[in-house]
Image (cartoon, rainbow, N blue to C red):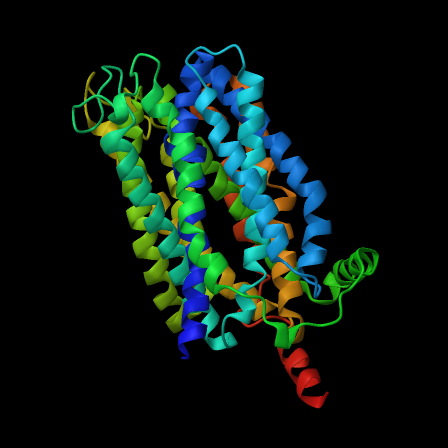
Length: 452
C-alpha cells in the first residue's frame, strides 16, 4: 500500500479517535450522570435528558435526508465537515457553564444538542469517505480498526478525566487529589471541564484528518444540484422494496443501533440514580466498556472475516438483550430479582460486568454492521448505500430516548424506564432474519456492472 494511501486511512481513523470523547465523556460516562446533579433529581434528570436527545434526534432525522443526499453526490464534503466540526467544538465548550443546581438547564441542554448535532453530521460525511479508502475486500478491516481506534481514544480521554479532573463527592479525583489546574471542586469545576477538554481533544486530533484526507478528485463526478440529489435519493428509497434484504437490514440496523445508543446514553444516569454511583465510579465503568469495545471491535472483524457479519451481528444482539434483562432487574438490593444482603457489592459487580458486555458486544456489532452494509449495497453506488445506512441510523435516533423518557415518566422508575431497549433489540433481531448474508441483489448488481 502506498504511503499516501496508508496516511489517508489513518487520517480517516483520526476522526474516530478525535470524536469518540463526545460519546464517551459527554453522552455516557461523565457529563450525563453529572447532569443529574445539575437538575438535582435523578428521575427528572432522566426525563429532561431523554427529551433533549429526542429533540436533537428529530432535528437530525429532518435534516439527514438532505445531507445524506449531498454526501452521495460529487459535491465536496470537507467544507461540511469543517462546519459541523465547529458546531461540535462550540457545543462541547459551552458545557463549562453547567454549574450544580443551575437555573439555566435549558441553555445547557441546548449547547449539548448543538455539539451532538455537529458530531452526528460530521460522522455522516466522514462515513461517506469510507468506500474511497481501499478495495471492497479491505473495507471491513478498515471499519473494524476504525472503531477500535475510536474506543481507544475514548479510554485515554476518560482516564485523563478521572485521574486529573473529575471529582467525587469528597472533591477528589481518582488519584485522591483535588482537580488539576486549581479548579474548584466545590463548584464542580473539575467535572465541568469535561466540555472544554472534549472540544480541545477534537481540535488537536482532527489535524491528521485535515492534513492526510483529501477527496479523491480522480473519482469525482460533475457537481449535482441539491434538487436532483433529492430526487435520486427518493427514487432509491422507493425502490427499496425491490431488494427485501437491503430493506430488512436498514430496518434491523435502525432498531438495534438505536437500542445500543440508548444503552450507551443512559448507562451513566442509570448507575447514578439506581445504584448511587459517583462520577468516578461511572468513569471506571466507562473504561471497562471502552476497553472491551476496542478489543471486540478488532476481534469482531476477525470473526467477520471467517463467518461473515450476520452471525456476529446476531450474537451481539442476543448478548445485549440479555444485558437489558439484567439491568431492568438490578438494584442496590437485588440482582435478577434475587435479593442480596444490604451493602453487598454484588449489584455493583454485576453492573460492571454488564458494562464489559455492552462495550464488547457493542464494538463487535458496530464493526460488523459497516461490513454488512458493504455486502448489501450496490457496488456501483456504494456511497449512496452508506448514505442510506447513515440515514437509517439517524432517522429514529430519537426513538430510544423518547421511549425511555416516556417509560420512566409513566412508571416513576429508572429501572423500568430502560425496558423499551429490550423490545428494540428484539425487533431488530426479527428483521435480521430476512437479511441475506451476501445481499439480495449483489449478484445482479455485479453482473450488471460487469456487463456495462
